[in-house]
Each structure stands twice: as structure tokens, then as C-alpha cells.
Image 1: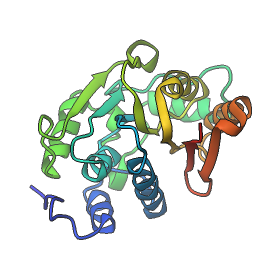
Image 2: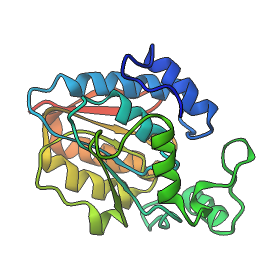
Image 3: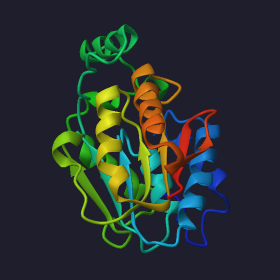
Image 4: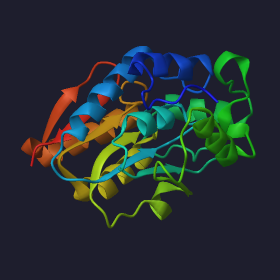
Length: 230
């Protein structure tokens, strides 16, 4: 088991380095830093609420969120835990070409490892990865929600933080439609793929234009972060 971050990981930077060293995330050091900033801001929100990730892959950023969230806050992990759904008509040809490569079995994971979407036991793998980094699923209030977002993403509780790593226009739009009504004032959403996939960027831009002054942009360099202003 890797060092537990109670007294703890000396810094969030060391945690990010260990996650990268274990080949559990494509996320850059700058994106990890932005995640840390977003989690700090969300942690200052007055209202309690759920932390969630939509798009878990091998669990690298889920580990990061699980270690940095407030101790009593629940964390829900949404993913198909298998082959990702295809892009839709709103996504550009580049996204369809990327999916075709994945569907053909030609995608590679980090460091030549097996691409996560080809693993038949992905949910079990993610559970093991979280435990390797000292997370106890019951004690740390972590739950897995397998399935497509349209069928699984429904909330009765307030939401304090969301990390959306969902690639395509439809998936990101679904996340926004389901998360936004429950996001508390001061709550934060981070979009991993804003600069990677045009469908994600358009979904976020359309949303920001629609809600206007209800959101403020926290950052838009590596990933894209929003805070609910009212």
C-alpha cells in the first residue's frame, strides 16, 4: 500500500507524482494543480454536499479527489467501467476517428499498458487502485455508480464538487443537465476535456452562455473550472 495521506501526504504534489508514477492518469501536473485549487475552493463552500467524478478511467483523479476532499464528504464515481460510449452527431470527425481507433483495439494506455477501456474487470481494478493509495471505500464514503450517465446520474442531495471527464458533447451536456440544478452556491465543476475535444468545449460554452452571471470561470488554461456564483 502506498503512503496514506492523513498526516499524510506531505503535499498534493507528491500525491500527483505517485499517481503518475503508478501509470494511473493521463492528467498533466498542471491539471492536477488546478484540481487541487478547485477542491480547495469547493471545500470553502458553506453548504455541505456530494463530491463526484464522471469518467473514472483507472481511478487516478478519483484517488486525488478522494484524498483531498473533506473527510466526511461522500464521493460518487460514475463510469461505464468498460468501453466508452461513441460520440454523437454534435461531435467533430476527429472525435469519431478517435473512437474508431479505440473500438478497433488500437488504443494504448500509459507507458504501453493495456488501454483501460479494454479491461474486463475495470471496476475491480479501480477499487484496487483506490485501496493501494490508502482509501477505504466505506470509511472514506466512496461509492461506485456503473452505467451510462443518462441512466445513472440522478441526485437527491446537494453537490459541492464535480470533475467531468466525459469527452463528448452529449455526455458533457448530460452531466451539466443533471449536476447544475443540485450544485450549491460556491460549488465547483472542472472539465478535463475542454481543450482536448471540441464537443466538450461546445457543450460547456453553450452552458455558460445560457446561465450567464450564475457562474464564474475559475480557470481555462489546462482544464476548465467553473464556480456557481448564485
